[in-house]
Length: 233
Image (tube, rainbow, N blue to C red; front, side, top):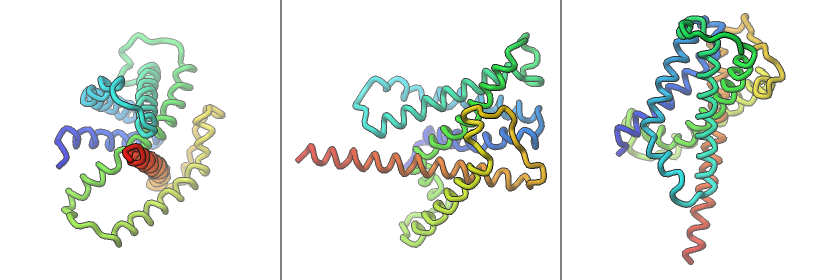
């Protein structure tokens, strides 16, 4: 049975990951809502790290397998991106942190905010993918699924493949690489596009990153398991 603390940590991960696409739609939500969403994410980020303080303490302990290295890189990437978002967000704030005596550095703050938001989107999605088994366990308990089903498993894998495929299309359509590598500083937004489609595109891209991280981690864990069995022989 999953511990309450683990459930809280996973829930915070999911809420933060779902809030990130909402904050990226600041043209739809408005500047004030965008800043308050960012402030809420900052609070959740601090809470998440406090709850995971034991993970940081254990960094120098144990053996680093391929999976653990991958997990550590993803976790620290999320940490760096979130710090970048908070620093740049506070510097550019016109509402929530407007009382702070900050002036200048707006060009740097915009570039940092662009980099941190899009890389953060990818890294946070990958972070969720690394914990996908725990999320599935929570979902099974919520709907009281106790027996495994081959049909359900195949259907879920098929749906995941469709989401990932649409995520690739959305990734190309929105030209995300331009934002990841600062090829442009202006976010292209299609005002004729229904808001629901904007969020569908970003959720699909999130699903793509989750799938990549989940199956990459699964592959690494299988290789490590085989290696352990081989060494025992």
